[in-house]
Length: 248
Ligand code: 3Y8
Ligand code: NAP
Image 1 (cartoon, protein in one colour):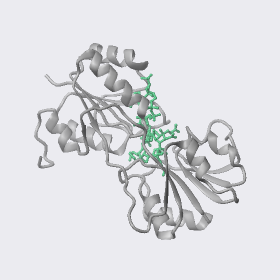
Image 2 (spheres, protein in one colour):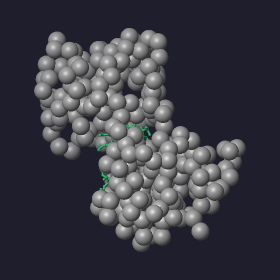
Image 3 (cartoon, helix red, strand yellow):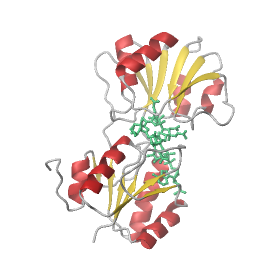
């Protein structure tokens, strides 16, 4: 009897949850508890960390989980690493639902950097109008370049003082090309910093930057351990041994 644990928190994870609920597969959806009001899911939902690898392994045993689906974000590296370790420890089948990274197309002006710290170095010394589209958790390193005027975008209003003066847009996405063009034009944005999240929910800013001829500091994804990885909901549902209406 299948009982799946979905490590969620992304648009793809929501699509997967809908398909799993429709197929009548027994499953639990899991959020890390990063946002105040995460989207409702059509499955029993838990919110908050597990307590590391051992906490996740205990949850798998306690809940009688037979399959784990890592549908977290490509930058949720610690969760993904813990999932590999806990599933190895408990002998639980694991699959990752992970969208392909965005690839540069003609007209893109990307400066590809390995991580946030090197991304700061990629910004010019001369003052610029920088849109940091990387959320809330990893903005502190940009305090080392206070000459720029920064626009940030958070899911929830900031609770703590910001590490540097900045204008904060509060919006959870997904975002549209029209909305991104409007925002960048009215704010006179001249540089963008983004993570290569992939997927459609956040790529509008990359398309808008191309349209406006703006440079994008594109932060590459962290290295993750080897694990079974697919890019479609249908492949996950098939892996669970079910057929889907998605025609797979
Ligand atoms: C809590 C669940 C949906 C899902 C929306 C996707 C699309 C918008 C792109 C920009 C980039 C960013 C950020 C982003 C994207 C979708 C998707 C995606 C980027 C929610 C969600 C949770 C989170 C956590 C949050 C992080 C933050 C990152 C904002 C829900 C809305 C910047 C990643 O305040 C915080 O602590 C926020 C933390 C991790 C990165 C960061 O370091 O700040 N996502 N985002 C999940 C949980 O608790 O388990 O609230 O409903 C999900 C979505 N985020 O319904 O369509 O790709 O799936 N999320 C990045 O790409 O750099 C926004 O602004 O252009
Ligand atoms: P992370 O740094 O990889 O994980 C840090 C810790 O948060 C994990 O070790 C785990 O705590 C807990 N955690 C993370 N995701 C969880 C989940 N889905 N269910 C239960 N616990 C979870 O994670 P993150 O990058 O902060 O991402 C947190 C959530 O936001 C994830 O659901 C992710 O899909 C979503 N998200 C992240 C990004 C991003 O840019 N990182 C973008 C969009 C959505 P314990 O060790 O205590 O188990």
